[in-house]
Length: 526
Ligand SMILES: CC(=O)N[C@H]1[C@@H](OP(=O)(O)OP(=O)(O)OC[C@H]2O[C@@H](n3ccc(=O)[nH]c3=O)[C@H](O)[C@@H]2O)O[C@H](CO)[C@@H](O)[C@@H]1O[C@H](C)C(=O)N[C@@H](C)C(=O)N[C@H](CCC(=O)O)C(=O)O
Ligand SMILES: Nc1ncnc2c1ncn2[C@@H]1O[C@H](COP(=O)(O)OP(=O)(O)OP(=O)(O)O)[C@@H](O)[C@H]1O
Ligand SMILES: N[C@H](CCC[C@H](N)C(=O)O)C(=O)O
Ligand SMILES: [Mg+2]
Image 1 (cartoon, rainbow, N blue to C red):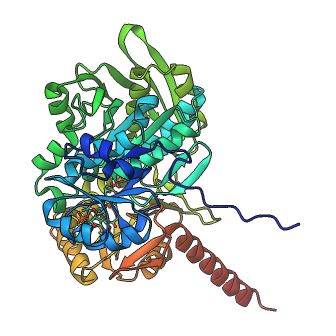
Image 2: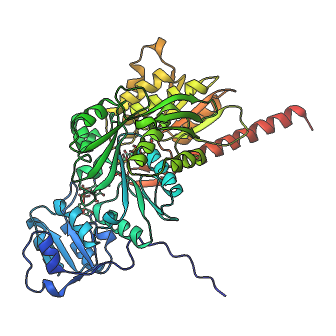
Image 3: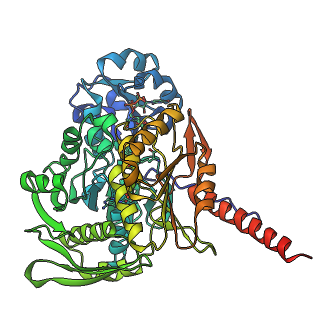
């Protein structure tokens, strides 16, 4: 008997609420036109490629196009109506879509999507994490602890999306509002009770989480990244701080070891619980007696109000992961989760894809793939590696094209200072000239006085760069391949070529062991 092929899981609830277009117009603050009462809407999309039959298509102006340019595609895919601004109205009506017109579709998108799906986040324990680095790690830790506490969980973030046991790919760190609300509705329908999600600064800027009030929002840290979107650090901070507002979160947990965290804790207009892994005065929760081992684990104690103390074991390397675990633990306590749940869940957690992930092999040096793609993260992981490495620290790194240009020389600079050898290479050049991107990293590296920096080489092709670094490694060295982590593609001029640092490193190690064995056979003779 033929076994039916597994169907890819939908990202939409199977039984969405049904609304008339007249109701939707009222919620959006527009006039319900005649005929709107006869149109039934069962979902919402702001991208024509994601429209399913029964959807309201939100045609909003973007930086590249106007959504109304795709109204005909949306209608063809089954959209039953459109919501747009005055400049998009004609195109939507030409596509035969009954059209609601509002001044700013972007601003109604989040709340309207939440309303259309029946406010699913209100029925879920919602934990959201923002910050430049550590969001994915912290949400994975939240997820295992919530499950240990008996919740059925949802996870939304950079690496993947989980609805209970089902795993779906993630296109973004934080989905657009219509996709987010549909996923939350699907989670509720599938019996999920708690959600750990990453909230990127893009999400806060574009209103992707408007329509969600988090039970607890966490702030990890803020250092340079994404200035191509925010312009300067102050605006970047303002975007992140917007999560800590009564419209977005009931309570906040803030890391006091970070300069912006201290500012946030002082000024946030919601109740804030603070934490510190580095002894910041006045923190509600602290990590103490931190013991980092050379095999990439740590033991420490977290100490909180009223004599609360818990001993934690973590199978993640570096003091930055102690900070992530402390943030997760403080968020969990603040959400009312039993501490016993995170004590055992953290001890059993064995790591997450592409974050300080060891590439297995018989070689007598370490090869590690990590997602460090900011100056702070590069410095933090290289300094950590220095602590346990007997030999030299060798870093492979590049910077993404079409992203923050200012971070490139800073990443080059910190890598040159902290590593013994830096191999500069490509990382998702996107639409940019890859040589220009590498030049900027190289300029930063070479600005470090020669006596204070390691050797620096430029190897454009990423596979060759990995081969170069692994080829240079001697017993006791650590090779850190940075920036792409779990990513499975290299994006060059609009084309994504399959590329996974972990796979490539393994292939290179394999090639090298074959070559060594062949040479040994030649030496040994027939
Ligand atoms: C800077 C940014 O985030 N831009 C996002 C934004 O683009 P935009 O406003 O310019 O929109 P546009 O491309 O002009 O299109 C206008 C409208 O037409 C629609 N459209 C467009 C084409 C089409 O065929 N059909 C269609 O309906 C679009 O969905 C949109 O509604 O809205 C688009 C539609 O949702 C997103 O695809 C696009 O994300 C781009 C691709 C992106 O790369 N975003 C990244 C940087 C991002 O969001 N990253 C963050 C943080 C990462 C991290 O640090 O972890 C994330 O959360 O992932
Ligand atoms: N608390 C931290 N402080 C500084 N660097 C960190 C911290 N946690 C992790 N890192 C570094 O940042 C990298 C990315 O970590 P993670 O994926 O958890 O962060 P993220 O905030 O989700 O990143 P992204 O915004 O790209 O999704 C890690 O691979 C590590 O190099
Ligand atoms: N999620 C982040 C990290 C990508 C890291 C790096 N591989 C790059 O392409 O810049 C971003 O979208 O900026
Ligand atoms: Mg992430």
